[in-house]
Amino acid sequence: MFDSPPIKGKVQPAKGRGAISNPDCRYRAFTHDGVYDHWVDGEAASTPNRTTVTVDKARSIISRNQSPDIPFDQSINAYRGCEHGCIYCFARPTHAYIGRSPGIDFETRIFAKPDAAKLLQRELSEKNYVCKTIALGTNTDPYQPLEREWRITRQILEVLRACNHPVSITTKSSLIERDIDLLAPMAAKQLVQVQISITTLDKGLARLLEPRATSPQRRLAAIRRLSQAGIPVTLMLAPVIPVLTDAEMEAILRQAANAGATRAAYIMLRLPLEVLELFMEWLQAHFPLKAGHVMSVLREMRGGEAYDARFGIRQTGTGVFAALIRQRFQLALKRTGFKTLSADLNTSLFRRPADEPAQLSLF
Image (cartoon, rainbow, N blue to C red; front, side, top):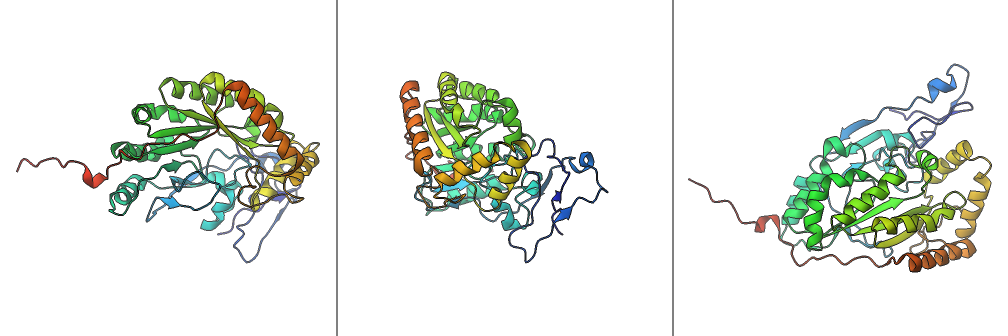
């Protein structure tokens, strides 16, 4: 079945959605476009698509990588796609792997893995398993709105806590507060590190950039609650968007420090594959007078291209503007007292599920 083509001409951005169009999956042999023909008015065309959830029957749950600029070896993604709808999300192109569009489909056609905890327990039980920190939220947010009902991330945490397995969590949702009862005891054993991502403090801009994510101010409150519970929190200033959000760097760092975050990191805007087209379309719809300036600075940081995928460069960029951002970030760290190095989590306490003492039978 084909994706719905973008209708060019009069269609306005859909309320509550980040992407404006739904381009075809890049693996298809051909593409198609919709053209505004006056049969569909702008208001009807801008009605947001409803979210649908499909069960993803995964065979394994731990993904591994060898990327030299990523600080983790293994990760778990409980969901494919993300209802937060962040227009800049570098994970959008992964929806093409399952034949769906990185556009509207990415934020409305979600694939959930309800067997994730069972698969994790099985993989941790293997005798050749070596304990290393497992990262949650590396591709899509583990606390996106669907998690309230599906509770897959919580089930994963329950397995990890029972095994004393270290975990790193990255999210932009205050729903993580629900699991403080699991995370606080793990933090006491140096088994957990949380990264809260904040892009902007401007509520209006946040609604356009990340329409269904927790508001920036609510994320700051989540940092405070987690910190007060003894859970170490790192501020992820991500992504830094030239012209639109870079001026807020110092203010975000200052407010996160006041809320209790102890470490900080930043990532420059990345526009791999379809994200480039989707982001440029979003810019033209919401900030037409700034679009050219934004893209000009991005290309200056990427050697004249819109994106540079080289390890060690893709997350920070090069050139004058990238150097300025690095200098500002380092100065802001000194003023706020932030650290930049990741916390080392404890792997010595790990015990396989099979090592758990078995309950004796009464018969």
